[in-house]
Length: 248
Length: 344
Image (cartoon, rainbow over all chains, first blue to last red; front, side, top):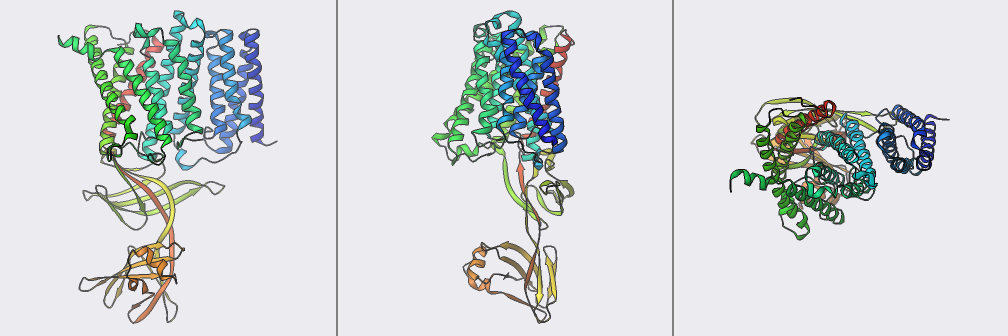
């Protein structure tokens, strides 16, 4: 068995574990699945190590790796914030990770050397920071879907997630801007991915203020749920259905 | 109405929230319009306002609306920052979180100014950089002293290292290394030369003496002395059929210049298509006489050529402080999240 196939099998197993864990969290209790999710994190971490070794580069460059990166980051965040979620919320979060993980069954697994543009330190800083921000925003949206989000502590947790996500995304935007300047002489271009990143940045930056505007606070949940669509368009829509240079 | 009240109204948080949402909506509509009108909006085109105003078109409506909303948003943002400063003056122990927020808002103002400057002043064009010197207004003249390609084990391009030499617009000499993600910059980053692609092109020619077959090389920096003056290489191009067309300049002793075209193509029309000259006579120089010897075109030596983007963007001087302020804001925000108590 070659290394590439071995790495893929690790993710196959991980995706199955996550699916079963999502059901266990829904039917029984999330306390039973912390260890299996840690195993998933380790397995997927090995997947990235193997691919980094084979590519001689950071493994976030194609469709398969992008989806598995999101899968991995959701699992890491799920373990870290396990006590902040109810069983139902945790189950939805794992189901989201499972959907991202399905990428391993859909996309072609090709080991390719990265093009010269990607060979910069700004790339591995830009991509994981942005993806982790997506993860936190997804978590905030899932938390908002359930009634418990109106409780003060949960509302504060949602704002906290947004603040962390916004900081990460801002860092992603700065590192992406520096990379853009060094590679294309521009920190911003009318590229669909860049426009949609700006949309997300303004949208969630705006939501940081919602707690200070009493008349709008009642719409907080709705704004976070609507945010899911913006993230999906930024992450998947521009990647598959636009003319973006960021197209997968 | 006192000044404080005016600041409060113009920096109103709710108005700011709604303006941001309107800006988000106009960006969404702009993204959709751009994606649906591929012929009007070329992929990956730069942030240039001139594109939207010369000429004014109904399809750009989303952009005009975005500009108006951005202006209102900027005014709100400026007054919001002023209001924050007034508040800070009142409080003795200011939390790091509050400073982080103020700095982040100032950073956004800087970023907006940077984009305004960039949008109204940016200039860019593409040039081919090879051993042949190229001159760009504001940049000076430069050429590639050496171009070194690096490859992966599978033969795909990994990087290109270019030793760029030349003279800046102010007359000072420069000798810099350029590669992918490592542009050559001038005027504190306002002017940049960036590698976009690498291709190959003719860099020098070899003439053949008809009598004995002896060869005579000639590149862009070199010259051949003739009884009448000097012969210099002025251009090498490929015809549609793939034949080389060499353009030579014969500088006579009385400073008069004569153009000479040499080609390996037997199809004169094909060769002449590149000279943009209908006078076929110019293309009939299949041979050239130097010191009573007849020379003909023998071959072209191909070397790598860099297809580079040359860009002028004064907005860089505002985006750098914006990025710096935002980074400081992020650090302060992280500190305040960890300590959860006033640190300032």
